[in-house]
Amino acid sequence: SLPLLKGKKGIVVGIANENSIAYGCAKEIHNTGAELLLGYGTEKSEPYIQPLLADLGNPDLVLCDVTDDEQLENLFQHAKDKWGKIDFLVHCIAFCPKDDLFGRVTDCSREGFKIAMDISCYSFIRMAHLAEPLMTDGGTLLTMTYYGSEKVVPNYNIMGPVKAALESSVRYLASDLGSKGIRVHALSPGPIKTRAASGIDHFEALLNASAEHTPIQQQVTIEDVGDVAVGMISDSAKSLTGHIAYVDSGYHILG
Ligand code: NAD
Image (cartoon, rainbow, N blue to C red; front, side, top):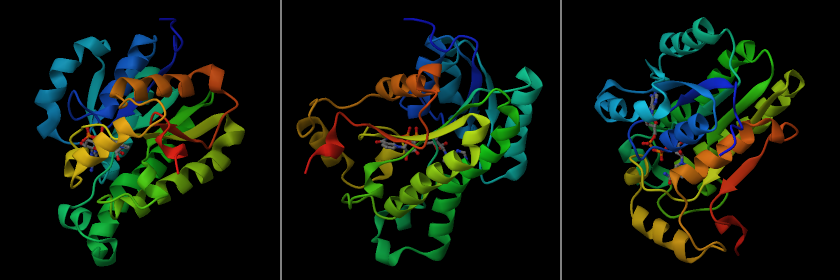
């Protein structure tokens, strides 16, 4: 394929294993010529990530639990020391405590809500803040959302309101940073079998529905998401900002 991202440098966070959307993004971004730095949330994932690094051009791997300000700053400092600047950030991180994820929104605890919002939404806002001074030639900030933000999707529960806040943050960040040439989007993938998805009750039903009832009639893959990420990061998309880009085989247009 054309080296669409040749010369670009940036950070992908949220890789846990070979099924992670972050891995699909990192692969396609690497394959189109960009240089990468990978952030991962917990040492427990390291054995699953190590075997994937060779295919990604052996990028630096930096531990970054987004609830820890020091680790967040360290990730961006690492990029600054390495390149002096970055061109993109791809944020593929979400978390909600189990009890709150499985229960009704009506029953969500204060603490569970705070944790889910902090890790799944505020971390993107904070990363935008840390990326801004490094995006000296402009750049692209991407995060991952889901359709359960707009419609009530069975079992998505409190992550619906959390993703709605994330999507709204995308629009405000896009407005704040547009004059600096920094573009901000969320990609909204259809259901993909990942570790995070395995936390959603009856996830198989969502997967099957997404295969049968979409215009394109195919489940999306992490590589499909990565390909759209590449397009958004590339200079071809330089006049787009603030989008919620559905990577869902068209599911969201159906009534
Ligand atoms: P995944 O489990 O592979 O990735 C989730 C990542 O979040 C993991 O790498 C995990 O370590 C990280 N994380 C959790 N808490 C963290 C913390 N405190 N600090 C740093 N990292 C932390 O699952 P995924 O499906 O690839 O999820 C990536 C993103 O895609 C999430 O935002 C998810 O909501 C979104 N998404 C997933 C689907 C799907 O069907 N899989 C659909 C739409 C959107």
